Each structure stands twice: as structure tokens, then as C-alpha cells.
Image 1 (tube, rainbow, N blue to C red):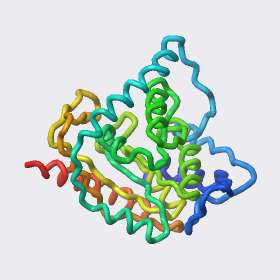
Image 2 (image 1 turned 120 degrees about the vertical axis):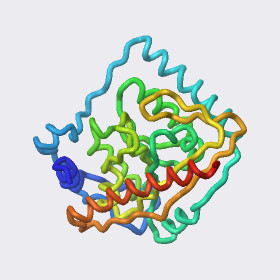
Image 3 (image 1 turned 90 degrees about the vertical axis):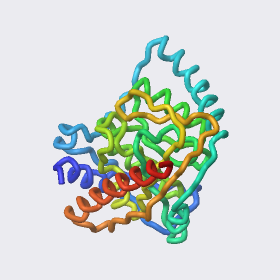
Image 4 (image 1 turned 120 degrees about the horizontal axis):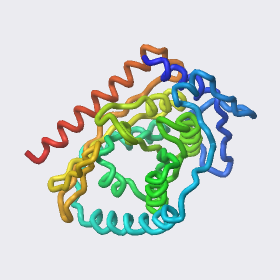
Amino acid sequence: MCDEWRVASDELSTMSTPKDKSAPSTQHSALSTSDTQHSVTDAARTRGLAYWDTPRNFTLWQRIQIAVLPRIAVLILNSIGWTLRWEREGTEHLQEVYKEGKRAILVCWHCCTFASTYYWKRRGIVVMSSQNFESECLARVLRKLGYGLARGSSSRGGLKALAEMARWLRNGKDAGFTVDGPRGPRYEVKPGPILLAKRTGDAVLCFHVSLQRKIQLNTWDRTQIPVPFSKAYILSAPPIYLARDANEDELKSKIAEMQRTLDDLREKAEDHWK
């Protein structure tokens, strides 16, 4: 396993996660708690895994766009989303997770963002969002659709965001990742969901959304936009668990399992329409 994954795992376990007493309790553990949030190591900083809580300054034009564009995006997403005709397979796996007293760490590829955002809306799912201009626009969209936000990304603020997601998992909310985001490489997983599963005991639940009719954008992730009234097929896999005391080899094995699972789901789901 890469050194930065090991550093991230070690540092994540030391970060403070105070429990919200007003929130519903669950039957699983979260990150270790402490009164003081430990600073990350120099090694983590070097590898871009540390958190700098520095607010981003936007130009006047960017602030105008941030105020306007999310409203348009939500209108478009809802207008197309309500026309979709959904087919589902593997929905029982999520219910199995809940029956075990766990929460779900939902994982998919970045190309599924449009359809999956509509499908999972209004459930209070917490997702990671960085603080640049594009991410701020997306964050406004997600809030309007009922998502929670943990500020950070795989390249900036990742540890702080994972700690925040762990706190929300502990308090009864699910978490969500587009696991090859925010900028790729496409179809290559990042370890965040598995690190989070290790520290909380919750389940990684991989899924893929395939569209019968779609527009595929010429972006790094080949974003798929459904054609109105298209059929949409969501396929979910059995949950992936990782013990809190798992060693490095087990961690590496589960990351590879998540990669294989998402690859298999994508192949099977995309073949559904052939």
C-alpha cells in the first residue's frame, strides 16, 4: 500500500469526533474521540493529505454565478430526474446493512453523478466537497437536494472531511463518494471509503447507474446525462466490511476488492441494455 494511505489511516484515527447528543445513536463505533484535534504529520502535509482550513475568496462574477447557477442546475436535474423510469437490482443489500445496525458508505464512479444525485436525494447523505469555485457551485446544488457536506477532497482537506463524515455516520447518516473524483484518473478508486469503513465499522456499498438513453459529455469522467423519459438501471453489490484492527495487507485487499466490485458493476450494468 502507498505510504500516504498508511499515513492517512494513522492520522484519521487521531482526529477528534465529538458526538452530537441530539442526534440518534447507532450501534457502531466511530473515530476515536479526544478533547484536542491532533495536527497531521509533516509526511501527510507533503503528500497533500493534511487540512488547511483557509476560506476561498471568489471574485464578484464568481459569487454571482454561485448564486445563480445552482438554482438552474437543480431545476434541470429535477426536471429530467422525475421523468426517469427506474429499474433496481440489489436493493436488499442496503437493508441488510441497516439490519446489522450499520450505516452505508455509498460508492460509485464519477460518471454516474447526475443520475445518482437525483436517485439518492433527500436522504441526508453526507458527501465530500472541496472549496474551489466549481465545487462551491456543486455544494449549493447538493444542499438544495438534501445532502450534507464535509469540506475537503482527496488533494486538500481529506483527513478533516473523513473525520467529519465519520461523525455523521456515528449519528445515523449515510456517506457518499464518487470514488474516482474529483478529477480522476477515471475508473481508478481512491482509498477514502475503505479508510472510513475501517475507522467506523460501517459498510462500503458499491453501486452503478446505467442509462438506456444518455448524452455522454466530453469530460475526463465521461459524465452521463440521461435523456428525458429514459430508463435508468441501478445495480448494487453486497456490502464490503473491514475490521477496525485490520492490518495493512487487509486494507490493501479491501481497496482492491472495491476496485473489482465497481468494475464488475459497471460492466454488468452497461450490458443490461444490450
